[in-house]
Length: 89
Image (tube, rainbow, N blue to C red; front, side):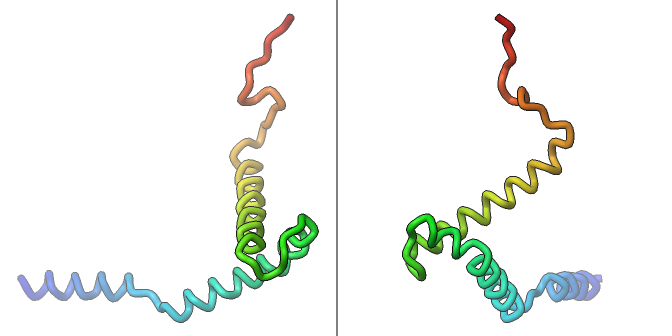
């Protein structure tokens, strides 16, 4: 019985194992995409290319895009009065 538990634990851990090289390649491809899409916009905003501030600008622009996309799906019936009270005078 103890052997079954040990085999189950080993199988569970083997299923959760990840490939660090594949994850690194995926992260590199994603960052290259971000730099290609958002890099020129950050340069126009005045950030010097290949600086930490430029990279932070790219990340911030990407995050804002993701947030906009998520908000479009979360609120299909959006109203300009959503989130702020509407008072008649």
